Length: 96
Length: 410
Image (tube, rainbow over all chains, first blue to last red):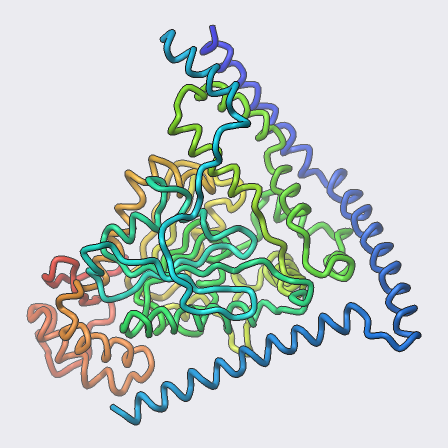
């Protein structure tokens, strides 16, 4: 009984998935979905910009400024590691 | 049969109180940390490492690395370690808000390059085997276009290379109304929840189908543990660093620049034809995340004389981590690496061989002098004209059992 039900379920699932995939790929779905997502993202970014501007006007470092500084520190760490590797390679070739 | 039914309902009743399977437990040490990523080195088997060249596993940026080390008995990493390999793995970690500025080049050129160099240096080898899974395979292939000498071999598992397929992800990414800049500006790092919902849309009935499958096999404790481990991994995702995402979508998906040959990274052109290391592309028939046609292009384009394509049944994840994979795919991968390696006992011999091998990639004029000597030494029948260059379509490599054999490219 269960095996029969399972077989018919698998058949139904496969055909439904194919149908939904076909529907999801349609420009009629993708176009408006993309536009809606973009609209929401733009509104969110605008609100963040306004908040950052308010903090900036008070002379306080914004979240973005802090993130940029932290990223630069990470980049510096990578540069130092690059130099260490080059030094190691030089020492190795010297010893060889 | 009755016992099975009783077990099914007992297991289902206790599903929520069932102890979660431990994932990613193969013992490993952290050998390097940089920003959020770590390089893990798995502890060797008690008998020690048998092969000189290490294997570096490169997982996708947006999934946890332990998909390749799911749980004891279902771990590709554990399998490699048991076969005597020195195994390294990149754990990309969790990006912080400041990583919104982390570029694709920094990851592919900087971080991946360092992982390859450190793996080789730590293992005392001239280069490393690399196995990239999904996006990890794409990043590995891009890195190999500029630095093929860093690879003893490259295996790209379900790695997208061309993005003009008719799949949902490609179509969605190319939708003109979808503004990538707006997304990155609003979120910084692209939230994993957003990406996960996009993956769910690839097969909207998947959750229902999984539930039915769970009911069907709930009597099987081994299946249940594997299922829960995979679900743990599937729901433990990582956000995509913003700048890297922008480049990934704009240049790779929308521009399809890698396939077109116009992609560049860190100021270097990334042409697949420049890949000269042994290359194996693995694709899966029912992969709806990376259609196999998108991943196969790699072997069509690389100029390595030693290139292979392995096409298997199964989906994007299951075909790599399932019981069937453990029986069929993993041993093939071990053989692939072994055929391009030599046992550790033969290390001094390797050193003599490996140096010219690297040099051939880097400085052809040195290789011209050294190669005939190696060829003569290794397989006299392949080098009748020992004074001339080695035939370009024949590679001579040490074999896992210490014998030598010729490998001709497909």
